[in-house]
Image (cartoon, rainbow, N blue to C red; front, side, top):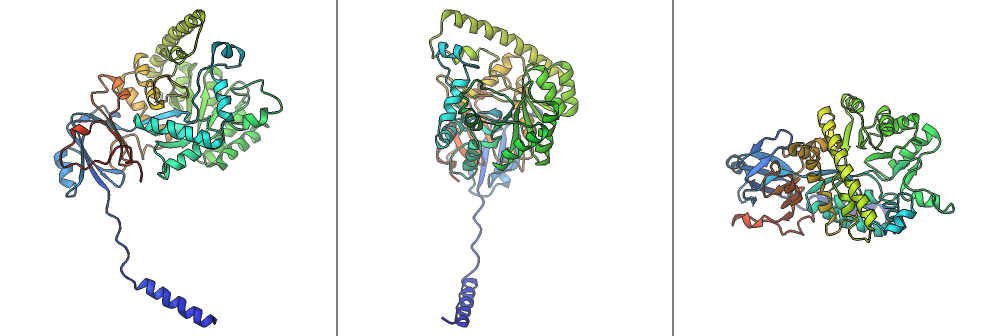
Length: 471
């Protein structure tokens, strides 16, 4: 065919496409009206009763009294009536490990290993194929979401990029789960495992960690290696072996890449290294001093409390294994000491005025509970340690959102934010254990779970639970 004829045919085809009709009309907005007996704002403690929330295309459009919001809603709007329940922002777990599920080994095995309760399960996870491990993560992420955790920050133990892949699959709507900020691999110097087979040690470590070698330049290189996998933040585990100059280089390079740095720091020395390095959050912080708390407050560094072992958790996860009477008694005594230390720590933290968030640090198989249910045990644990209920709610909503840098997206029920909402039957201020019994979950304006369906009016057209996340 001659070139001029090809040009003519292309021109005719283009004209036909342009003249074939008007552009397709935009899809109608997805609008939902929600009603509840109460709406609690964790930032202020104020309660709106009764309350209504108008949602459009996955975001909150209006919040107010039902009569006013209903008047602004379009005719025939889908209505979800949650009866007398209490509506809250979606919960945020700022310290998760969704791609590991450690089963406590037998007592004899624990005694043979460095960090014997944790390391055997970690090494078993590393031996899993990446696909198998991400599928485990998909299950645990769904269980977290069903318990009301609509946003999580995953801070390691995910293989090379498992949490990134999981985040992307959830974001694309392929599987249900919370919004994930993925940290990829932890940066360490020596770390959690020791005395590995020398022929395999490097390969084993590379599956889980980025080892910082070569001073500040090596620290920057480790950050950039993680950045290559499109992480959302940098997680570093600080021990005595990380120097102040290396820590400063990690933070400087991460901030240059517009990423926050979360530092695993437990004892006083490692906490000071984290503070001096300018990290954005200190995870755990069990050994923090009053002076360090004041410095963190003045510098705006968050303390992310992880109350996993504050209230007898250690004994509970050993219930499925045979433990000698002596070991059982030792664990019970250790639990009592942990309760006392936790109460003292929480009291000092609350007095300090430091910015505060809370994360479950859940990476353990908890007999009889889903991952989400296990994560939610942190709420009564913090309350027993002396933290007021309203402060607990802030630590897993508005304050956590600020720590993540997502305060303009999540953490409150207000116009412009994602329609991530949960509801409980009672009053979580009077009884924080209500957060262990979340009855309704919405993410992106889509119903994930609704155990309050019996309250819905006859005109409601609620999407079926279990299928509503597909979008």
